[in-house]
Amino acid sequence: MNLIFLGPPGAGKGTQAQRICWEYSITQLSTGDLLRAHISKGTNLGKEAESFINAGNLVPDELIIALIKEELLLPQYKNGYLLDGFPRTVPQAIALDKLLDELKQSIDLVLVLEVPDEDIVERLTARRTCPTCGKVYHLVFNPPLSEGKCDLDGSDLFLRKDDNEETVTKRLKVYKEQTMPIIKYYQEKNLVQSINGVGRLEQIYKNIKSILKSFIKEK
Ligand code: AMP
Image: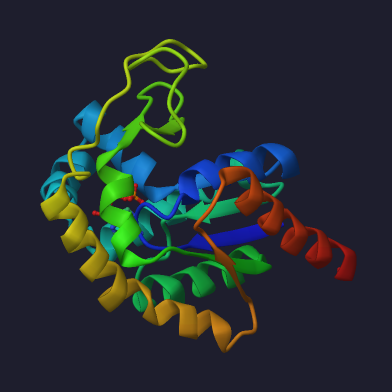
């Protein structure tokens, strides 16, 4: 099963993606996580991408497409994957289609997690992430058991540099202008299922599961 997960920054894609991937034995491919790994390793790609990310802008399409082309060939994606944070522009969606044709693969479903603007800033500025395993927390709604430490590996949680109010507002604008048009692109291919991303994490996950169950049954 190959999925795309869309939704504004802070919709909760990362958190839900981890659970979906665990339960359905598919691999999460987050371009944001890959780029952050490049930045912390100090690679050329990391150096090029950093200023775009910190300003809340998108990294240029050609860099992202090259990254995905290399990544999707790795064996861990053989049994299915969930694309989290990619594609983010129409040219990226078109490049993905071309790549999938070459690989004789296709996308089964595009899940869109919907959250109103007013919730986004509050959610992201209260978000904390584990640098080791990537687990995401919310200081109020999904806090770690011990303050500032990851429940799974005890690492010190951090606030992403791009999770401040000014950058979040910019990222939201970029999402609307550059990423939302790809929802229409996939609607025309009849692949889109929307989910309300407001409410308890458990309930949102249940709704996602029922969509995935009926998709698997129909197959
Ligand atoms: P995320 O972790 O998905 O919120 O991504 C963090 C930042 O990484 C974004 O604000 C972009 O600057 C960059 N980024 C991640 N994925 C992409 C993509 N598919 N295209 C362009 N930029 C991206």
